[in-house]
Length: 287
Length: 352
Ligand SMILES: Nc1ncnc2c1ncn2[C@@H]1O[C@H](COP(=O)(O)OP(=O)(O)OP(=O)(O)O)[C@@H](O)[C@H]1O
Ligand SMILES: [Mg+2]
Image (cartoon, rainbow over all chains, first blue to last red; front, side, top):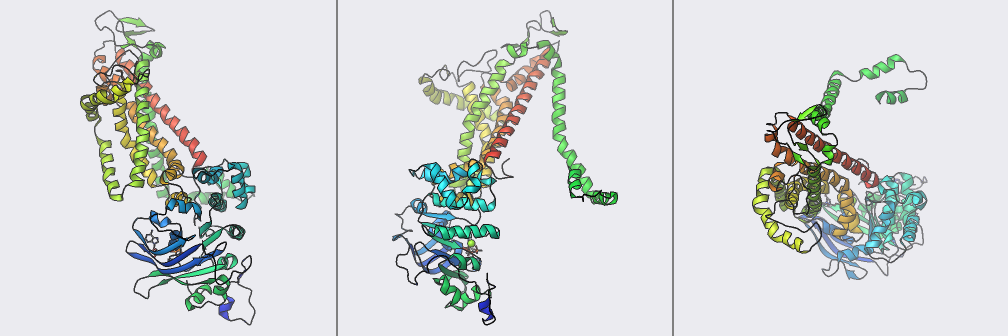
């Protein structure tokens, strides 16, 4: 992917992944962001994991979060659906608005929020139930009035899994391969018709072929969903995302804390980043 | 097994003998010694059980012949009149009037242990899940210690507590209320609280620590990421327990329940104290006095030893044999259940 070099380009450009995102290019300024993050600080106990993050996430776009290990990508992603609430001793400062409402407002119910924001984890984590139930459980408990068989088929089809499992919907989800389980988790996430899907390195445990399938799936889902994806794979960010946010560990203030270095359209970040650290990272000089 | 694998690894052409023996000899002395030691260690429980069963059958044999089917059809268990002329049957002698019927004891054993299980499993599972999911680490630890202490209390203490304090208390309160509902078999003379109901409750208290502490470890081992998957879908904590935690621990809970059941089946002294020790009748209500196989063996052994024909001891051994058989059967039943559920839902290598 990155080997398409000509003799004229510099060495650093030679290692730049080529941006091949599907769909029309996104405007530099977004009109109607789904998330607006302002001055976000995040603490695990006394350890500050994120400092002063400002970010907007565009509707029906794929936003990639990249950066070296430990820079707070996962932490940030889990702030967006308040999943960090589950970890004792964590603290959030600043503001995150989702669809115009502050999500850390005490009056907002986290459970309601999470129904509108799906999540796919790094490790496939299906319910210890049948394939069918994996899709059907959440819509059922959320009281969605739908034909469940149709919904199951629709979601599995969208997740490009239907053909592989249609004959064994009653089989345990654990009987599937890792890549199939991950697509099942994506199908499970879209079954509740969320507005956003958060993905934390969804393909990191998968082989190249399964990875391509997941990436195709993301481009396909972009029509209806907003996707935020954490990835370690620069090529992947360049292949699928519309915008890219680069996080890094900053120790200029004496403690190692995650910061957002810069964010822009994926094209801009991968061709003309404004910050030297971004350039170093995407060209593979560190991280 | 090993030879099959070896065969597969060999090329299609006839394997050379030397290559084979070289592979064999890769197992060095210490490895072989360890293998042998593990084999012996693994055989010990099996051999012990086989030896025990053999001894029991040998001891019970005269009674098995003497009793015939009477053992399983009669309600009466009495060692007879030791001073009257001796009776003979199928070549064996027994005191006059002796009758060895196991049926009410078998019924008592099954009823009390099953009731105990019905009470103990939900309480244990709910308690273990609450403990792990809801309470802060520090309180969890303290409560865990109490749970283990509870498991270590001698059963005679439970028996005394049941008969002097807990039984009468239940009789005055809960039993009165249940009785007033007028449901057949759930109403009757509640007395001082001795009988099937109190024995079941006390048995439940005795097996709760066993089931709860195993369940607690199982609940702890449920992967965080599995639970987070449910939470991220907007499931409430109780829905998460229902769709993630319980399915994950189900086979383990069955195994824990079987363990608790075995304990309740064999419990002797506590039941003997609380049962009201009713002989030769089936419990006509849940509050009625009754007896179990284990309690009866303990209660009768003294007088059985004075039987000059020795048949009473043989008969008690036969009762013990039935108890052993029931315990082994429940164990196998539990095993089948766990296997079935394991096939259904759990990831490979999980479960008990
Ligand atoms: N549960 C936790 N408790 C305490 N500290 C944590 C916890 N989770 C993460 N951290 C810390 O927060 C920082 C950011 O972690 P995070 O997992 O968000 O990084 P990441 O960018 O996702 O890294 P990776 O690319 O390796 O997944 C790290 O220093 C990490 O040690
Ligand atoms: Mg991470």
